[in-house]
Image (cartoon, rainbow over all chains, first blue to last red; front, side, top):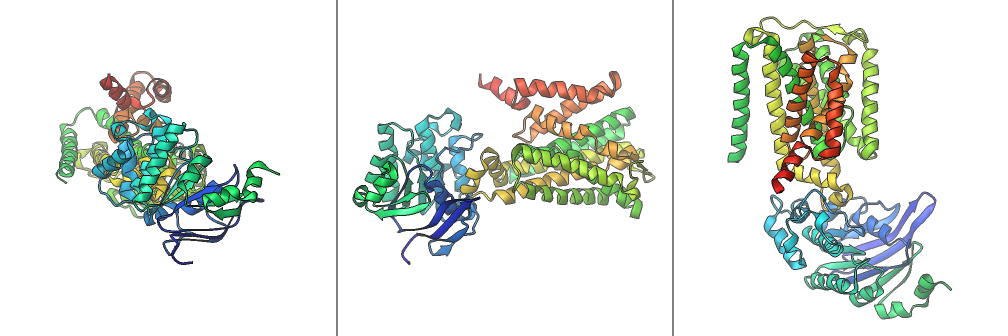
Length: 238
Length: 311
């Protein structure tokens, strides 16, 4: 199907005898706000790892902006325009917050010498500017999540994958992160949101795909997903 | 660019100072001991490019050092090759080994990588012990070329090692301040995140292991002419593995000056202990100092200075 930014076709991922992803197909359109949900262990993060390149799919193809990226290493995919945040923040601990952004700016965003001015711009946008010269160890939980998003943004992505950026945050903090993601979306960045906080995913997503036990069980608008009996069964059981 | 020129100038000034020292004809023991300290500056700096910048702890320093030394032995025996050729060849062979362990990082991280490098040293030593041409387990005598500059071969080797130390330190400093150094720091902090932020981690790791290996081989290449008798136990000495790790740890691993400080302090202390107390005190001193630093100042002398300044 043309017109998609990201095409995942029939991706299979096995760990030994366990099939984590079983022929998963999903297409994300340019500029879309896309939600990916499913119970714990349903394969969401595995799928994202296959898209970002941390894992290689055993079968199936992944295309991005018309190019087959199935076998590319992660850093090449980042340079093509796929950036992700990590569920458990993985900051560069020996560097300041600003220098954390310098790495993707220099390696994926083509800035020179750590791109100081660009890093400051991104930090201002996301509200981390006062912390620019701190080490990540001095950040609060929500600031750490913001750093994850800011660092992903510094790679100048076309597609941003937000892997549970809101888990464990308070309700006001969730709204804070949500506002940032809406703003990025309005700048034309395609966003895939993986989230357990239903209130956030339902509000944010234009389209949602549901995974359960490595299979795609539903796809539709938030309203359709809420009414889907298969989704209810996956989350609540019979 | 002008700052790079200035750095080069400082490097050349240090070498010139060494030549002046060589002409002064001080107590010969000073050159003899100075060579060892400078050799440790090269070793610690080389180790730190992989261990400090990239965070891959290499216990196999003796393997690289000895490979440089035995490449020299082979070339001396087979074709009486001149010293510059020995140094270059020793470096290149060790660089190849470095490239090899670079590919190990694909599968082995953290402690497992370190264990593999330790095994590497044992394997290589066994091979050398069984290779008669370079002396096998008995060792081999090497005759120094006649008519060295400064009238004495050890004094000459002292200046050569000083030049090599300057080269190694400049290389480390250049790497640290370039995009390569920033990428290595990123992968040291978190390899998966670095790769996902566009850092070609495998390529940078291969670069680090190769350059580190090259410099360790370079440090070992003049060794046969320095000792004139090479045998596996001295070339593969455990001292190299311990010192290569301890010196950067004591000085500070994140900058180029750390290993230099560590090598000069610890190297001098060892030389002093050797003459005043006993040659067996060497490793004891290293052990005590290392434990003290790991407990009290894990970021080395540089980290200590930084902490005091921040107060």
